[in-house]
Length: 184
Image 1 (cartoon, rainbow, N blue to C red):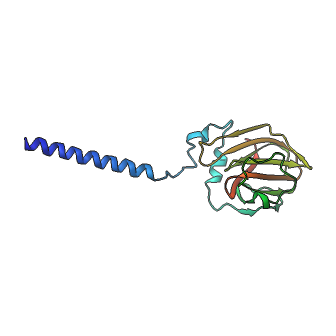
Image 2 (image 1 turned 135 degrees about the vertical axis):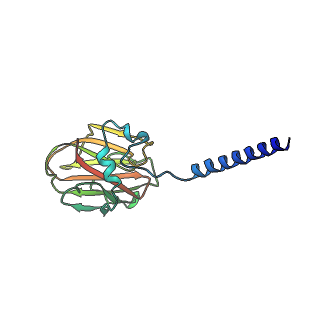
Image 3 (image 1 turned 120 degrees about the vertical axis):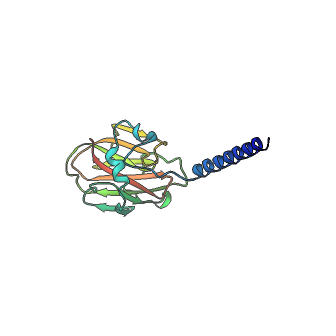
């Protein structure tokens, strides 16, 4: 009888250790592997493998809102934003933001090396205006996913070999990681 009670006590102890371990595991945030798209990261309208690798590459260049660059970097970059009320914009936002406490800003690039279908990939959600020759461009396609920890939005747009402005409003975070590249 004593052996049976010891066995039950031992099993109870193992059960408690097991519960404690799983609770600890749930409280730790998993590290995202940018090379293995998980969750919604593989469910955009087109592959984002290149962009996910860029976003996870570390040491990304960072620019202040209102920056002017000759061309977009060859991979991703980070844009530091200002409070929406203080945001540096080239033109008024095409639509009004629903986020009154968001962040906004812009970045301008000189003439793109070539025209064609481009992908603009963003780490955060918010309003995005794509401007060339003083006109807001219509997106060919736009996908947004909240179940991808690395990318929130992927846009495809037809661009010409002309200067490009990207501007943002209503972004929840004070910076956004961006990739601008010809569509694959």
